[in-house]
Figure 1: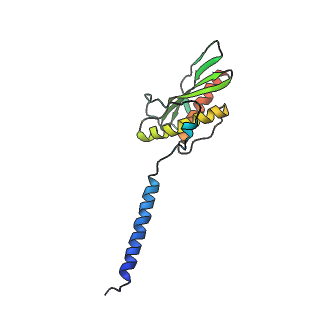
Figure 2: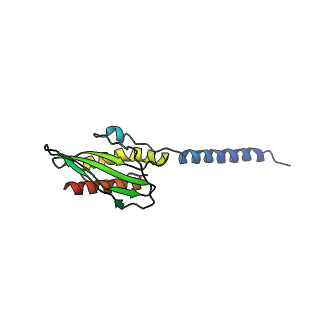
Figure 3: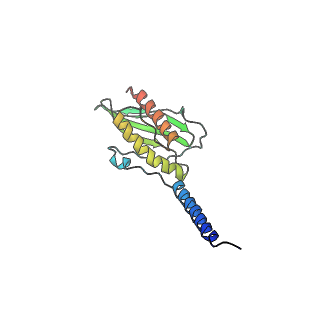
Length: 165
């Protein structure tokens, strides 16, 4: 025969386990947020989708060619190398005026899956804002977007090297 205290203990145990399971599920599904960094940036960054081959190379594998264009007013635009990351190619275009970085635009970013698009969507504006503030490729990696960040930095550095800046 069951004692009267056994049923309430079972209910308490089951409700505690159900609550803990629910909290764990909610925490694992928490989406990334930009923290307002995209709205606070001075220059716009675009993560325009581009045809991208499936890439299996790790970060740091760069290939491609950059192009540069300048005007008589001292404004020039330089494209960095296309860097193949684990999730797809990353390439940036840098606009310089008088030796200062005035704009950085993402030409290619990983776009193969909705998750790639989400990561690129929150990482690229932060990386662009940091590059404009630092006026160099010495910027921090965005948490949760390590491969995209490393590809961005390498492409940015190649563009700056090509520009002589």
